[in-house]
Image (cartoon, rainbow, N blue to C red; front, side, top):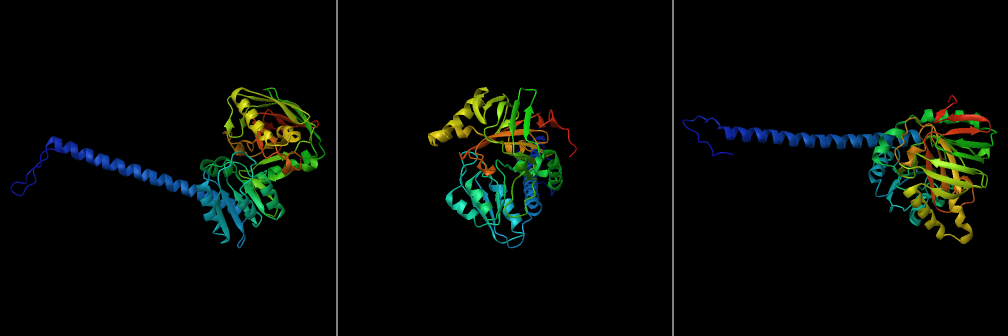
Length: 375
């Protein structure tokens, strides 16, 4: 500021130009700082409110947690905020809730630490927002046998937890998946094609279709992913032959180059597609080397097939939500024991096709990513 002005004859002197400029700058700067702080506060409050709203929906609508139930929330350092939001929502229903932060895993299907697995067996409800999926683990299977109901949320982020597929009406999704039942019944041969070059055929046991991935998980021994919204099945081992072009996403990667899987008798015998394909070969190869020689080929088992029915789900590079997107389908490679298979390999990774055409025997249900059926 310029030189301080003196007060003469009891009157405050006029400010010179420098004084006025400094005063104006000071007011603008102070106002700007206040606005920034207010926006940050509002953003934090909005984020907390959105997390709380989604957590309440999971607790009340999806899991229907009741008073006095034992509830275990398992998260890792990447999902702590979601875990905390779920903990706060559960405590509105039950005081018997435990929140555990375990170390982040290395890949989907890796077993949780032994103390966590032991705790899972003592629960009635398990909520698992973690970076890598616990769905296809012995720990989850054992908890289900002991009577728990489980919602896994692999790869869940705060943005995913509060938008997209998680904002769907899960009661409506349950209705749509139930309506698929009559079309799946007694159909044994599945053929999937796409304009990108997919042409694959395999057999299924139609009684094994899983139609409960609808987000409503309110009875003992039920298991769901969140966000939910898919119908899926294990291909009959040894029956799949042809070629699959993955053009949507693979694991946590939104693809900019296609992945080609060549499959014989239910086993992937070749993977093509640049850097991503090389990474896939390396990742599965590392898992295979830890297995007995006679079991190593099993890491390449085509373990699961399914298609999405959640119209709110987005294709964004997180397979948890990508495989639920309405009109997509997916194939998963690796462990199929959770679906009754014999490939116990500790890795399970899906890839999503964006616009497939799908036939069940001679009945077409998807045409270029559009459902022909009225769901």
